[in-house]
Length: 472
Ligand code: 2HG
Ligand code: ZN
Image (tube, rainbow, N blue to C red; front, side, top):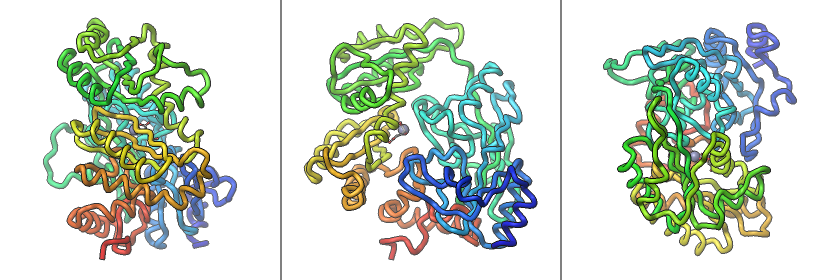
């Protein structure tokens, strides 16, 4: 081990290597503060050759490598948990290598922050159509590795739909050069799509070619008060009918989630004059040069809205978005929650939210359910908080796993998934093992063992190996 660390320190220099506990500390805690990890060193390569050197050296020594980008995982997917592990931070590799408007593509290194991708695309007269609350810290490598979703999936799909190519260091240190701009490439197994969503278990993504779309024209942002979640779904389908494919975001916010934001996030205020049980935030985008999407008329015509406001300035639009994007942060400030990033078929979601909430509240007296998010994708964050007044830590230590198993069983019975956009990470692996069909698990294990026979890449994340519970 000492030998390996010496070699890495020599090759990477002081900017690229530290084994100092204090310097490593921020990289060892996950975003939610749920996990405090362990590692031998933090390595921060400056380029792909240094990444290859690190991985080859780690493979030879049988030492775990935990790739990390912006450290915004919701499922502790980038938290090292082994005293011998190397945290491999990609943050120094943050160059946008190439922007090609003619190909509608840009190539960004793994450590490029999502916001910087947006800026680079805009400077070239295009846009990159994936956004999420953590856009100021989430990085390309992490977004691709987790097949991240966010608030524009409705129109443009998740990260997998936006990745044209990938460059990655494989677990033996070999470089996979798949950064092609080809729109069509039919050479068999799609390694790019295998690495996307692999959560760093099959290699380290060092750069990605991302699909761009035409620059946006004017955006219209509305906040609508509604009586039921079913009304929200009907509203979405009617607006789609009325506006073509202009609707890019359709986010559902229940009254209690809005209340949390207004209570905890300074500078926020209620968007509508009175309270409503449900709200939706809608963004419609017109092509460049076209008139704004007449969202107000379209909403009015449905007769479904109890009340609505249309942002009349960019600042107002940003303020409405801030309400939606602060829910996670407000919930974090408020206390602990058992988070469930679930999806069921879109048509079933309103019913599922109501029934699952009733079932959870009946089974666990006093708990508070907050379900919000990407209704148009059939994906909500069905988060459960401890009863008011309970000691959060003690309550979750005793009940957290039971609550999650209960929710996941309901989702599974509804034909859904326990992970829609956050991935499996460390926190959902046991539940994934418990609930996934055996063929899926066997295939995933076979792929993992074939590409990473030494098991060095992000061990403990995503793939339930044979020792996982309930597989015998
Ligand atoms: C969101 O949609 C994020 O805001 C976070 O995916 C969800 O905190 C959550 O549960
Ligand atoms: Zn989300």
